[in-house]
Image 1 (cartoon, rainbow, N blue to C red):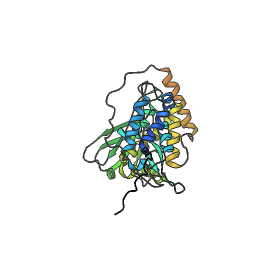
Image 2: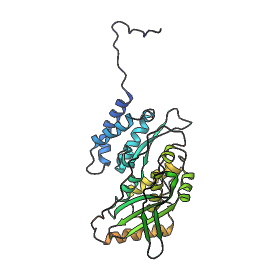
Image 3: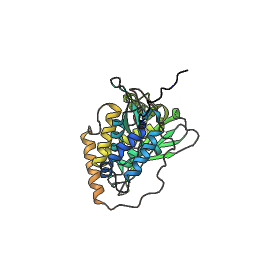
Image 4: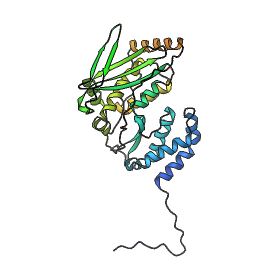
Length: 297
């Protein structure tokens, strides 16, 4: 039996601070910076407290470098999304790099977080995304008078039965823009993702399908500088390079036209019936280089 060595008589034993306490102190030291970038109405103390609570519940995140955790939390503050994983808005995910001894935390924006960012300008009144399962009544038409109709059958929520995903945006003048993706198109985006075999896609496929459709819809929606920057960074984490700025000329022109149109009209009352998110945020799980990233392009 091995006995613990006793401290020399008269020696002062100093308890080592816990990693979570050190992180909390580092974030509290950054309160002025965090407060400066948080949206109006969000308190920096609460923001830090909720982030610390989420990290403390994940052993994998506790292994990440403190610098990467602080950096990711500050980035979350900049876009106004609490990185707790709740309601599929945003969370922190550990990434492993072969050249580094410890994993690095990165901020991942969920599909509801992306919808929040798309509403940031005030020109978009409502944003929602849904998946279509086998057995649902679903049809859509493009052209001069686009139409989309979806009547869920509620017979299954098996991700393997998903056949489409779509995202819709209602502008201030009441007009609606939508984008539909087939399962083949969704899987093509997954194939390009660095985290295609990570828990985001394997455990939360419906949420990833929604975000894929939202990400495509974002090309046709007027975005704030904050939202566009956040999407570019999310794309870079997902695919290794930013893609939000690589917008075809026709799409860029359409976005400018939408922005000009929205600026000319008065806001209309919000429409009832916005789709509610599923209560299934991504689990915080350690990962390899093919870690979970949520983004779609």
